[in-house]
Length: 238
Image (tube, rainbow, N blue to C red; front, side):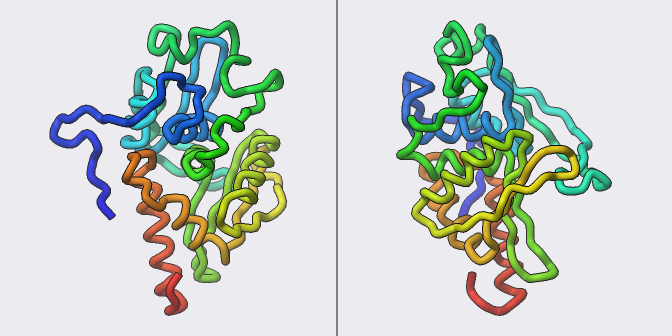
């Protein structure tokens, strides 16, 4: 698979998007998955954070806004005694940037209900892109050297968002059981996809993603490398 920069040679990034940012569409599903996983919505602004520059450019192509880049050091969600330093790209979308997206009376016009919970019904036909956005927004991928397996987990402060994510995974065409929600040391929650189901689930999640450009190349590379490590570990195909 190619991971070429979508803005190489000075070409503007072109992503097919609907005129209504709340309409059911692969691009909007991916965008709102990211917003739910690593974003913040207020009456006059949306901010979404990603560690992948190309994914940040995709989100900006979908919804407009301004991108800022900085290097941050943060605690690891599962163990606050461990820190990591990484690039962080923040997309800020305000009224002046995307009136069509935020030119509404309140966040109730966005895909959130009165309690701030995301309403994903409009994206039911694009569950793969929605889940991909959620994984890239609040998910982790790792190779488990102790067992020779790959782990996929989702971590967030919002328990109801993770419960909704579990439902999306249960409804996807891949049989991918998930564990129970558990508390993290940072005060949030997490759950993991069953290790045996990760190869099929992860492959399905990124299948044909280059056709739309709706993916983070660094995250896909991490998944592919982890699956290759697991395959080499036990000598079986994943």
